[in-house]
Image (tube, rainbow, N blue to C red; front, side, top):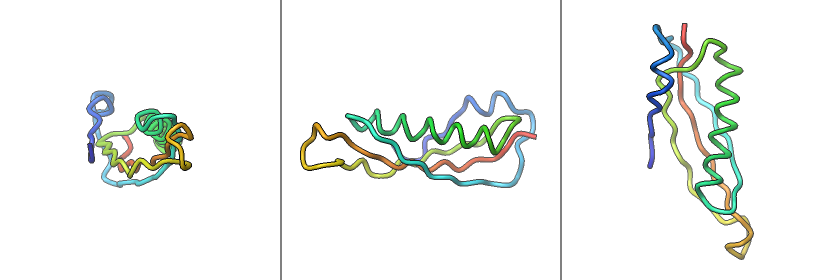
Length: 88
């Protein structure tokens, strides 16, 4: 699921800026989908800080989901990268 595009962000914006930003965040969870959700939540906060009027043309790229410890019950971590522009 690499390069998922968020269509929601494009609905709130009439003009998308030409400058592209890229941020990476990591997340933890007891399963990979929880780890991804935690990373995306952190990225959403970063994008809100960078783009007060909203973000647009957002592309999420998932990193590898890796176990935190030797047991599957130790949880998983995943890095997610977001590349985006700001609404203007």
